[in-house]
Amino acid sequence: MNYSRTDLSTEEMLLVNSEVEKKKRSLVVAYLLWFFLGALGAHRFYFKKTGTGIAMLLMVVLTIGFGAIITGIWALVDAFLMPGWQQREVEAIERETIASLKTRSERQAAF
Image (cartoon, rainbow, N blue to C red; front, side, top):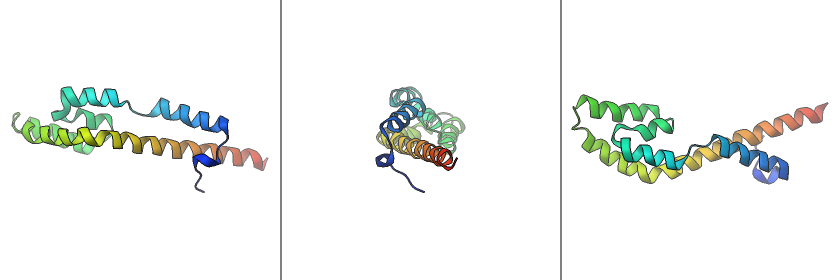
């Protein structure tokens, strides 16, 4: 079943918010990685986008640094995409936590 935030009690909502704050990735850390190591794809590794992070890293390493022009432009675009990545991550954490809470409460109600 799909549950939403409106189906939660105040205590459950506090628990969901606590889980989100504990598990979400920091935009400050992401932007620091982007600023100092963006052309190498460090910010993408941080957001678990490993495949494209490896692509950026290899593009720079295998072209002896000349690929940094392309990955630099790529990283510039990523600067605008990172808040959306974090928001999708927050939504996923919320969904997982709400589902876990509701299945736990359904199990307890069955006894």
